[in-house]
Amino acid sequence: MDLIYFQNAKKITITQGVWGTISLMKGDCMPTAGYSSCSQCPVHDTINIYKYTLVDSATRTPRPGRFYESFNTPIIAQTVCDDNGFYQIALPPGHYSIGVLVKGELYFEYTDGYRGICPFQITSGIVHFDEIMTYDAVF
Image (cartoon, rainbow, N blue to C red; front, top):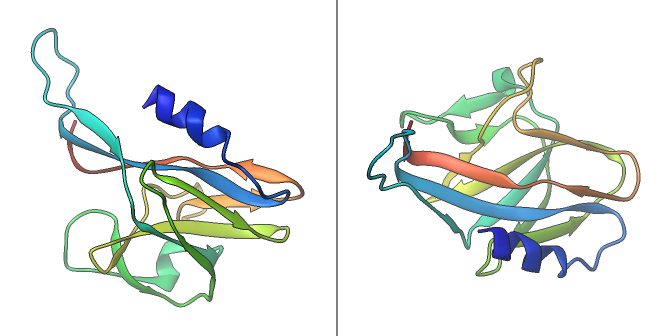
C-alpha cells in the first residue's frame, strides 16, 4: 500500500478540496507473533461528500457496523475512486463528512468527539484524507 499511497499523491490536479486513498482491510488483523491473514487493498468505490453530519442525523442499516441507509444532510459531491483507490473532489471551504458507498450502503469509519460522522474541514487549499475501511477485518 505504501507504493500506492506514493503514486496517488502524484495524481492530484485540484487546487482546493479533498483527495486521498480509500482501502479495505480484511482478515485476521490481530497482532500475533505467527501467521496473520490480514491484508489491505485499494477499492474502486463511490465516494460521497456531505455537509458535516451528526450520528443523530443519519439512519443506520440493520447490518452491524458503521453502515447507514440515509442522511438528513445534503450530499455536496460524489466521485468514484480509480483502481488504486484514488479520489479527488474540488470543494469550497467548509466542514464535511465523507463516506464510501459499499453495496448500496454508506460506510463511515469513525466519528469525532461531537458525534460527527467521518469529518474533515477545508479552510483553504487541499486536504489529504485517506480512509481505511475495516468492516471485513477482525482485531
